[in-house]
Length: 82
Image 1 (spheres, one colour):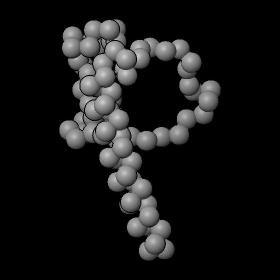
Image 2 (cartoon, rainbow, N blue to C red):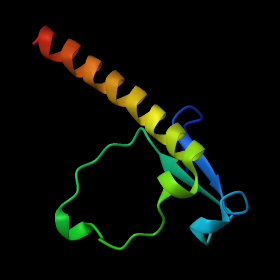
Image 3 (cartoon, rainbow, N blue to C red):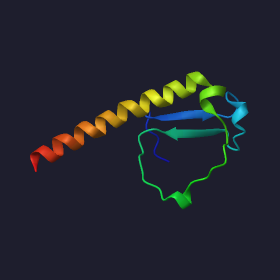
Image 4 (cartoon, rainbow, N blue to C red):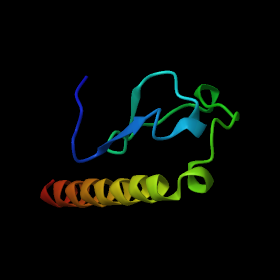
């Protein structure tokens, strides 16, 4: 597994027990953006990170915002060179 130390956030099941994770460590990959068809989405809530772990939520949002700005700037520079 390729772990990005800057943008992959480790989630230890012992630190975040209310998430009921099955693996000892899972990761939230804030730098891997993708498009999904609605048939691939679930309406079942696993956990509300914003309510259960607000510090973790803030960290995720912050890193996602940072990488989103980076992608946007990179795309703008790319399109200007075309």
